[in-house]
Image (cartoon, rainbow, N blue to C red; front, top):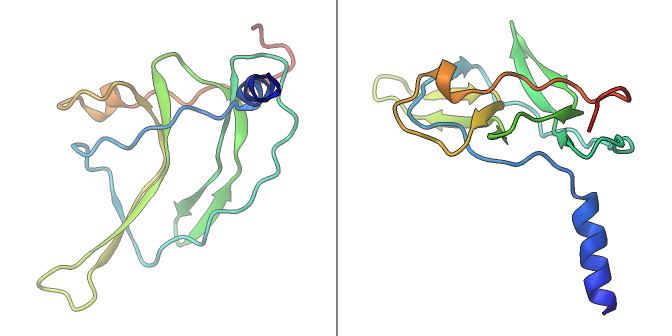
Length: 136
């Protein structure tokens, strides 16, 4: 009986954004000279009262010539959208001795994924931040 009570309690406090992966058929990679640092540890502020608010993790963004941390935040995710974390990949090239590092920034993606969608159709708009005035 106590176990059931704990499960319900934990389920109510898990308000992380739903997750998915970036669409593989959209090539929006950028070449970067080196991978980002490890993700920063974030202390989550108290969740807003609005039950529609979810936590979206922060991420490193490449800006001009360096990595800049974009902190996580509480947002109101659009229905049918999920957070796809950023990806970093290294690909060897036959004509280069070192290969290349590719980066794709994290984005909100429409789910379920449908192959053949354009980037405009596949990606959701950035969700608005949660605030005390947001209605549930």
